[in-house]
Image (tube, rainbow, N blue to C red; front, top):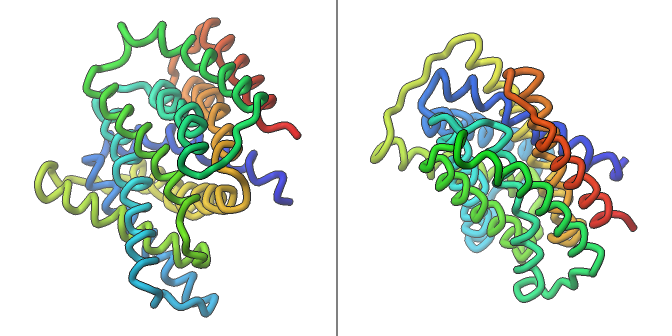
Length: 282
């Protein structure tokens, strides 16, 4: 059953880039994320109580988990949501932040003392070539500069949060850890809304359907699977599967949002997929 978790994660995480567009079309991105993680925090808190898992843990563990949530749910998701809200194509946003495995491979050695094997580097190199093939041809015509900056911030944040999560000394149950991470993400976006954004949400049926998808399938489903994979595997090996997300996101974007897929895009995605296979195979 565990072997199927990466595939479930890829499908759920990729779909988030598609449902982000209808959310930001009906709300301020940071207000939407505040609402999302308020509900998610309540959900994980309730789940922890149901499992008789105490949320009263050491202050150190609370601070570590909250900071992890600020990186994952705050800077990462905030950057992605904001970029898409100002015109960044969902598939390209997914592509930029999916360069994460390259940075993780570079940093996991000196920070986590993980050995990155030759085949992992070859896989990461192919993934990078595939991603660059698509990204390099799209920057001039499709990507707003501010959107590019926001997604680069998101890229750095998700890399840092993955390494941080792997390095954490606590051994909290997933539901408790996820509760405090959701609290951290919610507080981050509350501050952004108060000082920098406009708290506007149109609770249309489109917004509610898309938000429900992100709350239940992505935050409760995909994110929990990701935390489990990081905990059980090396950071460098876990994040290699992220190279598959742009391909799946772009296909979903083409199918659901009428975004264009060129032959070069498809070739780039195939190369990236081969890279993931090489990096993760035993």
